[in-house]
Image (cartoon, rainbow, N blue to C red; front, side, top):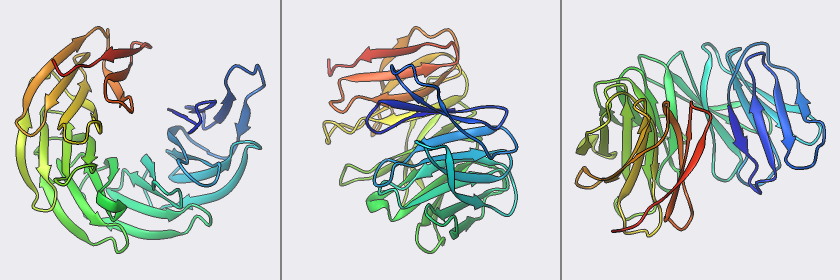
Length: 285
């Protein structure tokens, strides 16, 4: 697992032996070693705003907050059971959400490590997280085939979106007057939900295998484009409101595991298990 620093000059990597390394790119410096986890590090994430912190989630059941300049653990966030499967910083950097194999999502205070909110209703591992409109809601995707929406302050469930297949990726489009929550997983379908109602408004079908990643284009704001990548090694661009496939990008030799749009919305970066990252031009035509 890896994550860029907000300024793009450093990279954090998590390893199977529990190690977390901070790399200063292009400097030739020895990486900073963050020592503390006792099992595989499954996910890492750099704090997007505020303090210069890095978070790591591990199969030892903990989330650790690190000072990346010194490798010092600033806080340990400990759940009550299950491996940590995914983590997501709040956009303001004050809290961090963690999804676990016990089916629970927890929101921790990043400074103290205290558990502030518990979202508990899934019958399978929580595999993905996404903050919703105004960051007041947290969405969780699970292997139980549901995506649930929670009040981020109280942990009360607001709605449940049922896709019927293991959910591997979710993404909330919030830069619109009509927020939509996309969910995808094992069956290869991408469902576009009205999250407040839990109703599937459109279904995007075309992948030959599981879908592992999703990314909304936020520019221009009136464009309802969604990218998906998965087991078949392809990237598909969808007009999500209608479920129409606009383009298929072929070039990876293995599963596509990550996607990121450029801020201008005219390029899409993809990362694959083939060890290659690609950048694709995307046009309206």
